[in-house]
Image (tube, rainbow, N blue to C red; front, side):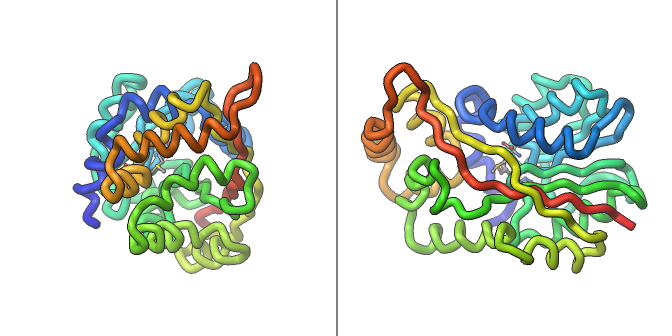
Length: 258
Ligand SMILES: C[S@@+](CC[C@H](N)C(=O)[O-])C[C@H]1O[C@@H](n2cnc3c(N)ncnc32)[C@H](O)[C@@H]1O
């Protein structure tokens, strides 16, 4: 799929994504920013920045922020949130920045095993000694919150297979080898806190339906059916007086450009 098609799925419910789903990622963002020890004046690029909540948080730490995403509707939200950030709609495999422009490149579940050119590009735009942090899913199926991602499997077999290939980076040794092959110094793999949290089954279904992989399922079974099934699934996990919540295993790789 060409990057120009990405907005069709990721951008169609950009506001729902930005307000119902993305805020839950704050645990992940804040852990990674802390681990990188982002400080005032760091030139930071977030690759596949989505609606830009991570960038907003990096700016609070004093970073000078840039970002890129293929979805123009998500970038519109990000730019509204961070008017001073240098944001671009474009392809992470062809970054529109000069060599050695950044001190830090982050990507939160944005760079996959299938996107090696994006890591090559991240390496190019980092200054020597610059740092890369990227996160990717670990063993989703064995995670307590696995049920919350199971609706993605309502897509066609081919799309589900593709989703599985995309998450290969989280397997032991794979991410380290991948980053080393792209010229990065020893990557450290750490477990990163991540959980989905939604108020109730309706909000869960609406928030999830706003994501790209959900769109693949929606293309297969239709939006009405997707929402009906997702609400039904979530009903089984309602807890009295508490939000719907499920943690998912997520890994972070930290690497340096020598
Ligand atoms: C799993 S989301 C992660 C978004 C964001 N990092 C976050 O934490 O919410 C994947 C993102 O990758 C973007 N994307 C997919 N393919 C892309 C490409 N070739 N170039 C740039 N962005 C892309 C999508 O638009 C989407 O925002």
